[in-house]
Length: 421
Image 1: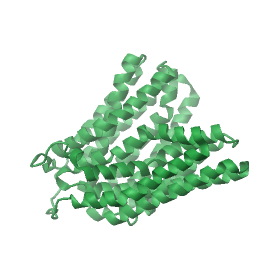
Image 2: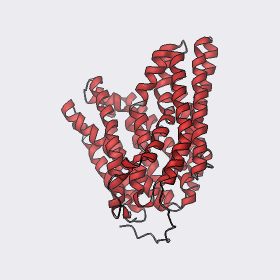
Image 3: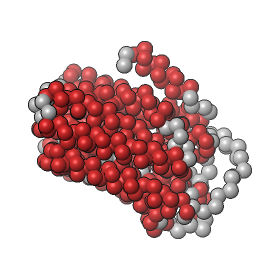
Image 4: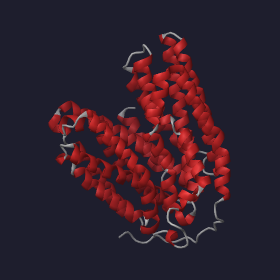
């Protein structure tokens, strides 16, 4: 997309957000710029600037991902007891401070604590941000707003990644600015959070047991089924690229093109794909559609072994388009299920727990996908299709059981937002 197209898209997406949701869009875009800036160049930064071995870097990033399991639950609970706006502002300020420490990291002893704490703080922002959307955006507009925010995030992340590529090309001295640049975006995001209307702490502490979501087996079933359906992300980021490089004769230069096509389509069509997912029934249908097209995509890649280069390339492109469609529908279903199944009195805790389906696929998905698809080629793709089929079959019954556990909720009286502190 050219600069004019990007500008027009961002303006149109912002126009679909109203009131406080526009500020949420601005802070999400700023946050994504920093994330794209640092994540795109983090591996190069740690190896060339920090002087760390590649194995240490990989282990640290894995540990940071694992920290998300505890952080999503703990910070979800804190969201309910402290208040989403207050907690998110604090987390963003702490993240700015954490990234300011990176220039001092030149040994594994310093690297591991900083990267794990940073990962935990970043995952902790998820439930607080989700709870803010639920508190500041009317019920019927939440899924659409969440989809618009995801589009803005992808646009900002892409812009940050391109900036990182430019900085890397300028050399080591410029590359050292990456973590500080990301830290500045967290400061800017924290300032935008403080511009939002103040929100009250939920009444979560009143009459609810801490971490009760971990005893809610039907809801945990929804998380498990959603984790299977969310494997599309690992397939697109790791599975297909490595499969092309290791198992086909296709030119390696098409790998970044695949990721670019996926990113552009998600940016352009996420809002449209979210239509109909505002209800639990609609979100469940979207999840099933995501699973079925993922099965078709796996079948296309399994057939790639039996065709020539042109046929393999066509099948790979078809699979990328199908997995992108799956990503659009599965993300939309996640918005609807997360908001729809989170009880009012423990919203942050449940949104944090639901975010575990993203943490699971991000930490375990790449290893599973690469083991099957790269290690076993066609049979591996068919095995992955079975995972998607299992998620498709399970999501409906799991949602039905989870919604029966929801307490009867009466509409809250409209409260005037308090002036920002």
